[in-house]
Image (cartoon, rainbow, N blue to C red; front, side):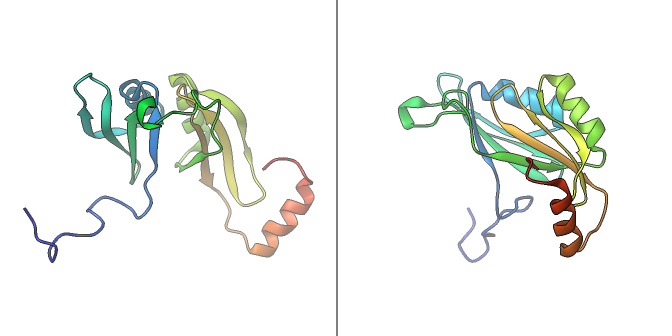
Length: 159
């Protein structure tokens, strides 16, 4: 076992901020994320009843942690909560292909891919477990002034 002096505060391969999702059916969510987002499973810790107490996948250069719902501990997913205010944002090389892949894997398209005023080509999906995802490919480097002008042209609709 390492001592405090030689243990990294942020483990190799991790970032400072790591999403940790609650899913009704975390094992099925892992399989979906493999198909939809090319996730690679890196950890799985089933409890005595088979529900996942902890799991992790790598999507691109980032880790996503997952756990099954455990209502007795107040751990509920977005379907049980009737929605979520959170959207996970995923940059990809080809957003059109990425959204198509997610939809083919079972995601619901909630916002078709389009060019956005802030310089990304962008779309949104909802996964079968109720989590919202935005996917984007950065296509233009813009100044803050360019973005503000583009937003003014767009009007007051959703971004």
